[in-house]
Image 1 (tube, rainbow, N blue to C red):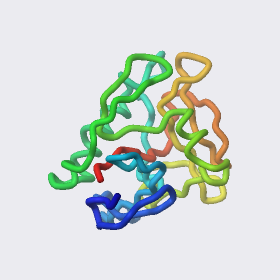
Image 2 (cartoon, rainbow, N blue to C red):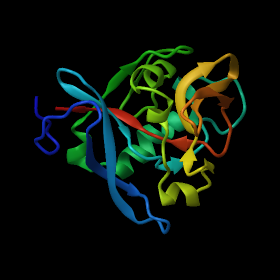
Image 3 (spheres, rainbow, N blue to C red):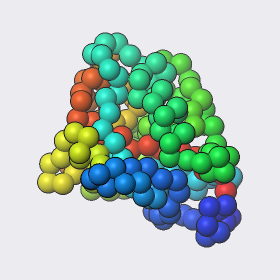
Image 4 (cartoon, rainbow, N blue to C red):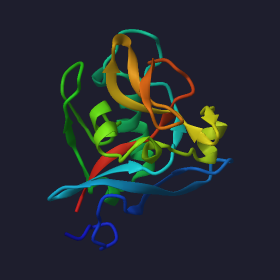
Length: 190
């Protein structure tokens, strides 16, 4: 099936541009490159190819789930409205998400779950991600040019959430860690 973005037949691993977000060191907006993780019958599950911004999962260290965290609100409000125009928003599919802690949610934009990160990438190297210059300027922590990026799944303790490290392995981190990088995901209609 061909997608509505650029008419190409898309498969896992393909990349395409859609929407705009600040990416240059001075906040210059550029097209966002998305990586296809899965091709479903009527949509593509995609993730930002690079880390787009530096945000905490939640502003305070506390027991929190995806349904109530500040990063979810930011992704589905500020990021969604800034990154996509009206026509692009019409292609973003609202997605019902199962969460390992807390209620199911319906989101336009979301973070991958622990299981998504384990199953949709071939290995640790495949999960390694680079930041934009804008994300670096906003405080994202790098190691050998790679970034830590958030997942939505809670881990082992109520104030810990799953986190992809700079080597692509998955661990846990405090929800208020200030150097976490945001790698948004969503489903786009095809």
